[in-house]
Image (cartoon, rainbow, N blue to C red; front, side, top):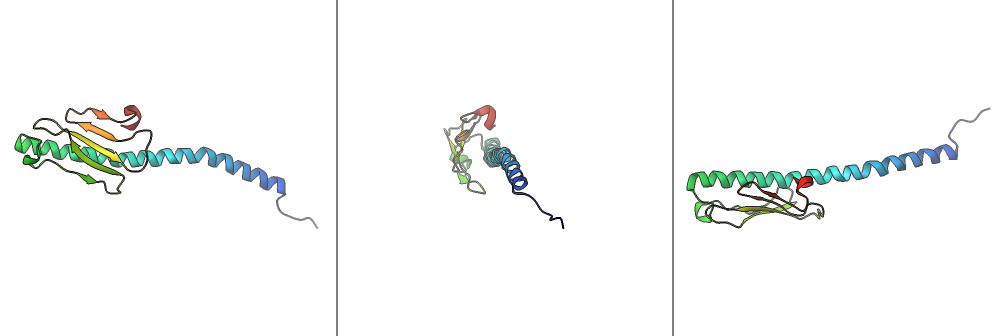
Length: 124
């Protein structure tokens, strides 16, 4: 009678192949998660910039007297968004990250549309 099953060598080969595939897939997954987290910060900045411009259109100023300032944490708490460098005609929106993104750091956007981060080309 012939026995059916896998030999130890066959099982070890499968384990090695799975390990190689996992070592390739996991960094790609981490990059995807980081990009999704950055998207939350960029969306929050765009939302605040839109509100600031709407407020400027209504009151001709970006100052708190015009009701333009908005400081808040994003929906998932990954960024704390604040408006700084505030004057009647200028502002800088900063999304300070809370999750340890060393590549990008904090994201910024000025009233003129200048984007800022540790690596603007990658992060924006």
